[in-house]
Image (cartoon, rainbow, N blue to C red; front, side, top):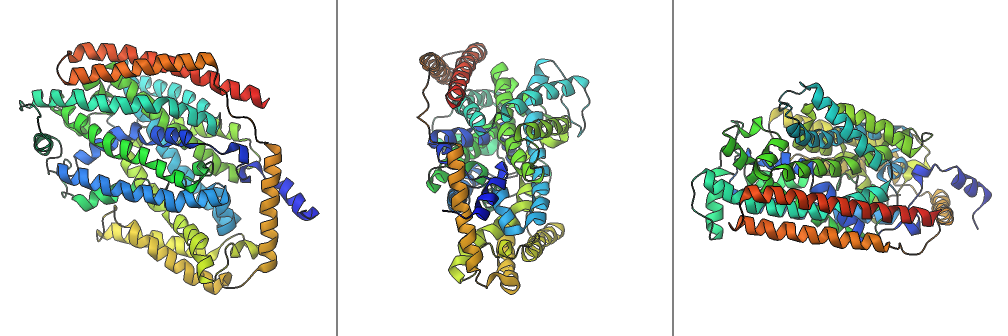
Length: 564
């Protein structure tokens, strides 16, 4: 039985600091949807085009992405998922214990700004598709040059924010609906883009893997840097694939999602996002970008995602960009809300989501935020240090005889050892990048060990070596009492029931998706004209989203009625 003081502390704990209740744990399906939806997304169109301009060969790209994405999946599993399942907390709540209240707020502010730029990128990239429908000029400046583009962004931002405000379950269900179609779209996109490429460059048909590699080396990844800079190689690709989600795996921000997992092994599900999104989709997007640039006789740098996909896939391609942007922005806005909810704990999560969504939408009006690759890289480098510190304290401290949560037990609002180590890591990376000694795709590796090593030394001097038995016992009692309190507030309920009509709609939707894929294969093999397939695929895509959208709404509402 917990003491009165602990019970009072439990009741005073803000909801944003609550661990996940037992009934909220999710099965693998939601995580397939989250990782598929978020990483088979709008940024993939931009990053795929970016890799075309790296100056790599096709072999560099294929092998480099395989290795880099394996490293990312392992980082998700053994760093982020392991900590999330162990604590059932968001990173932001966990940081409070490690960093102290004031330093944690600084981190949340840094992260929130970076995530806002990423969410804005998703919305802005989506807007390039609708821009194409209304014949709005391509936005080549960092600022908007068309009032119509601004209106498009504002409408998209409102829809995306509304979904994010519904919470984790709504975000997961929305992503789960979009993922199968997005995977099918990239698969079909590859099938019908390759014939267009061979026709545009007057190449022979592809009959063997070597024919494919030769075509890719000659016209897609040509070994020439599209920006006129230094050609990059396989190790740069490996580093890029690993660093692209640095903020989420080693930086631990996916604790927000993975805290709902039943096992740390759910971290392996990130492979859905890494290999379908950050391998297959990047490759397909690169091929699409290079092909559209050849067909339009326009430098790839002067084309946006809407123009590329419309050229090759028609209006179906525009739907892909819109949906992909939504699945990027939705979970990102959800994360930003969790981050700032710690700072503004008195503001409800839903109200804060609407405020943040509004700010992100305004940012999205500026096309400069579409530089997704740079945003992801620098965001990762900025928040990698706190991730390294948390990993060190959580996993290594107990093994070397140091006390986990020592700063919390000292009741200090700033963990000076963590602050110094974080700054040292950032200064090191800034020096390496400013002098050109190390490429941005590699610099996080030595910075991780520098940050972790300096933290061990400084924390040892500042109190981590000491034993805090009484404080540790009280903290454990508090954690157990808080978990029990949360479980009582949210009791375990019966498994979700899917309404019969929703099942029927799903069958119709997925049947249409199967036809979408089969006809796409036929088009790629030359049995159907590309222009005909563009029209048919649009109808089938609309059918899929209407049926599955209504089914998702019915299931979500059914669950809410059960709760009431």
